[in-house]
Structures are given as C-alpha cells and as structure tokens.
Image (cartoon, rainbow, N blue to C red):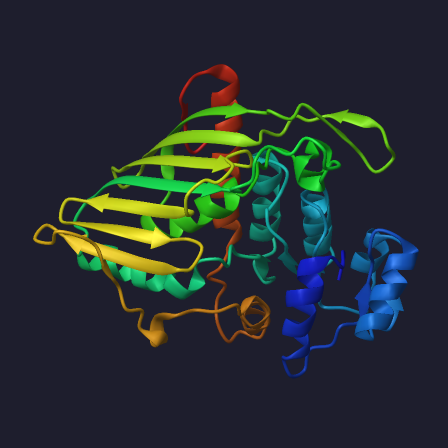
Length: 337
C-alpha cells in the first residue's frame, strides 16, 4: 500500500482483507509516523520510508496506490517495471501525457494487471441505463444534460485542499473526471469539447500559512459533441448555493431518461407519456463496489478488469486536458488529443 488515505482505509484494506489468500505486507504513507500508524491499525508487518523501496522490494506481488494524483504515474510505471500488478486510485494521473505513459508501460508488461479505481456513484443503476439505451427505449440519443453542483455558496475561508492544488492534482477539476467516466459508460466518449471555466476564489492559505494562488477552476461549463452523435451539456460547480438536485437528463428520439444522481433513481417517459415515471431497478442488475475482488480475480486469471481499464483512464484524462485547453484558447478541442 503506497498511501493510506481515506479510500484505502474505508475501501481497499477491508476489500483485500475479505479475499482469501491475500496478505497486506507493506505500507508507505506520506511520513514515517503516519506509515507506522497505518501499519499498527491494519496489522501490516513492513513499513517503508520511501515508496520506491516498497515497490522494489521482493516481499509483494501487487501495489495499491492511494496517493495524490501527482504520484500515480511514477509509482505505476516503477511498479510495472519491477514486475508488480498495479491498482491505482482515481483520478488516473495529473494529465493525459502521464496517462498515456502509464498505458504504454502496462502494454509493455501484458502479463501484469493494471487497473484504475472506478467512479462508484452510479454502480447500482449503470447497467439499467446501459440496457435501456441499447434496447432502444430512448431511441437515438440526441442530447444529454448533466449538472453536478456542491449546492454550497462560495467559500473563501477554507484552507487550500489538495484538489485545489495544481502541483498535486494537475489538470483535474472538481468531480468532472469522475462524472465524465460515468457518462462514457452510458453513451461513450466525446469527440469535440468546448469549455468555459472560472476560478472565483483566487487564493487560499496552505498548511504552512502561506497564501497560494489557485489555478484550478471552481466552476466549469462544457459542451461536448459525443461520438454517438449526441450533444452533451455538462456543468460542475463549487459555488452554486442552493442549487437543485444533481441529475442527468438523457433525451432521445423515442424517450427521455432522468437520473437522480444523489439517490440513484431513474425516471423515464416515452413519446406516448405525459410525464416521467419511476423505473424499477432489477436487483440482479445492481452492481456494488468490488474493485479489490475484480483486481485479485484478474491477477488469478479468473476474470478481466472492466472497471476501470487504463484505456478508460486515458480517455477521461484527455477529456480533462481538452477542457483546460478549450477554456484557455476559447476554441473547440477535438478528441482524442
């Protein structure tokens, strides 16, 4: 385990512990003290001061990366070079160049498993949405409207968060990459992106008390031309106080689907309907968190990685870069980069 943050503690450690024959053998966190705390808390025998020493050691078969995005690429590439399977936390990397380097490293070591932790929020409804689209309930998808807002008024007082620190997050913005990854599951990827962004809070105080200029936007509007032919209008914001429910609307030639993103509820209406009606979700189609299980099964040859592949990660990192390129240039950006 390189990095022992919240997701590792809440998800990965219990997930690996639940799998027979899996042993957590080493940990390296941001400091020796925090590494030792994690080792004691989770009964991990070996503590390393340096992540490279952990990766190079012969006491492990696979590396789980739970650091900030700034370290995902170097740790992943090193781990693959030292013949270790890799599960890395999302977002995949700082930018698309790093993501492509990670993908290339994985392609050069095809005997190793490389997986990115997937966006989990819509797992209970993903398959139902995919099936409704593929069966033709919606018809041809024409337009998508997706809004994800914090619902909070602008906050100028909070200290600098790592997600607001470009040195740690790169071009990642808010929850944008997560929701684009989910959108790709439903209707595929974009082929052209136009974006406007704004950074309303210009400076924040870091952990040392120094004021830091913020380069990562806190409000984003994106218009996408999707490869399926649809046009998508996406908004991500941290400044929209009292905004309505976070939701996605998928408009087709024959039907409209509304997705309540906060409660994972679906509502559908066809041409002959006057209003939307609730969609019953078949329990057999409801997925749940099984990241660690999927990773270990792939290593053992019992299955393949579906959520999420490095190819998926490259696509959403290219979209992320395209948003920044478009907002800076004022021009549409074509994908892939």
